[in-house]
Length: 193
Image 1 (spheres, helix red, strand yellow):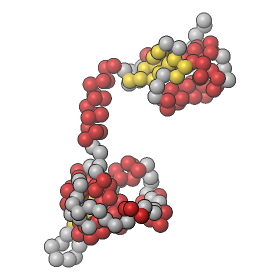
Image 2 (cartoon, helix red, strand yellow):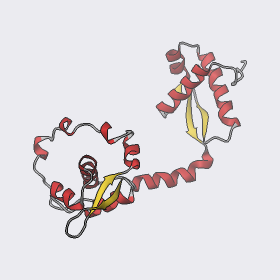
Image 3 (tube, helix red, strand yellow):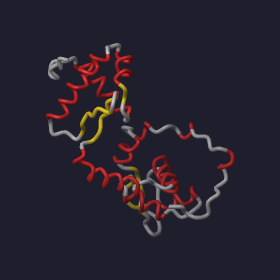
Image 4 (cartoon, one colour):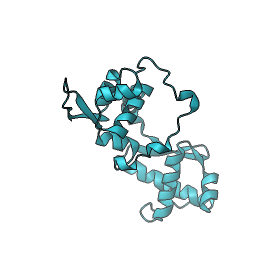
């Protein structure tokens, strides 16, 4: 079978195959790709082989592998140690429900003080605020002119990036949220951060 020169074949098909394989995550059968693209299995196979060559010739983090009658995008084995470190970091990086509640309050009421957050939540929020500061999702933004001069907290650009929004104006209006009846009364008496 003649393999197409991967520099010559149609970019839309190349991009389409790459996008499908990336989005699916698992191996995808050549027959399924052919049926979806309206191509023969032989045509799809030629494009896959050319795509595999493209991934193989550059210093890239991905590779295209054949798994029986299917094909899959995967990371190169040389990256596994780094990926494991990042995955471990990600698992420890999750926010608790208390931290998420605190973050929502800061996002919608900013600038707010810790006392403001605690008044709304009804429980101590010091550790949630510290956690959010550590994750750089909120930042200190000056001090309130009040006894003790508490810090004001606001969200950061990292918060916008995490939510994939451009500005706070992209947040859904508070009126769009409906609290289920069983959650209307605060049930927590301690922070669960």
